Picture 1 (spheres, helix red, strand yellow):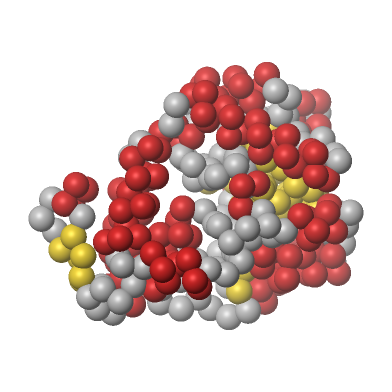
Picture 2 (picture 1 turned 60 degrees about the horizontal axis):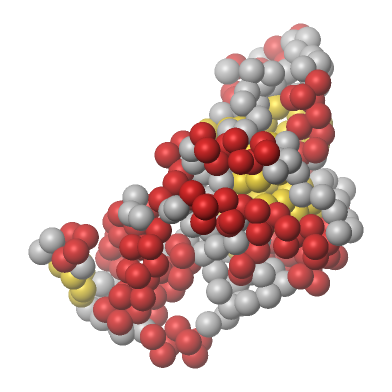
Amino acid sequence: MVFVRARLQKEHCMAILFYHRFSKDSANDFELPHLRIRDFEKQMWHIKNWYKVITMDELADRLASKRKNGTPCVAITIDDGYFNNYTLAYPILKRLNLPATIYLSTGFVGTKKSTWVDEVMDMFLISKKESISLPELFDNEVFDLSTPKKKREAFLKLFEKMLSIEHERKTSLMEELLKILDVEEDIKNNAKRKMLVWSEIIEMSGNNISFEAHTVSHPTLSKMELSEAKREILESRNEIEMKIGSKVKHFAIPNGKIEDFNEELKEFCKEIGFETVVSTEPGIVSAKSDPYFLKRINPSPPIYIFACELARYMFLS
């Protein structure tokens, strides 16, 4: 019924899918969410068969031209720049000849560093502490860390709190957590590479994968000094352009919610030449969309849910 309606429509919206991490199997009870690569492959086959897959450059051109979009279009985006983007997602995209965009946090490329979310998760995962307290944030509450499930509950509660605190406070809290969880040496000695290196990025950039800006260190931009937030955006763009030799036209907001961005940063992105800015707020892209705060869709498995949800967004919104 939905696809019959789609064939009758003369003008269509566009959708931007966004992904982060991939795994061969389901994530365990404690890991950050991953999409199983076999689910990703099914999703890619589906959009290849039912939609026109476009680049972010094409999406920006369609928005700027204001012309009618006669075909339902989908753009594939991936945030942060994890190593598993290269080992798991890239071979599928290459085999199916599908373009995609990876929004890169440049400060982690070629290092054993990762986003603050990953680093806090690693601290909890490695820690042998049975319980901890964080009185500055949670008064007298004691967090039980005796099982992976309890650790995850504590981590999620801390994660939500850390999203809302000022950048400098978050940075100092990260240092405190190393001591509170007693993992300073373990983190230093057991760190493994999670993110891409430039040689992988250069290889992919020659095979239908574009790389765009996602700041240097993945901070919450609205929770830091404006000058520092601008530096994060600009240096990320400049580093990518220098390394891969192509113009960076698109930016993804770290965390991506409406409270994570502001009008000053939106104007700055316009001034320095970005054509689009994407969020993680759910929704589709239409002629009425603000190109400097585009909505995206977080795809969910299994494939029948993904197919129905995408069709609902595209044809029934």
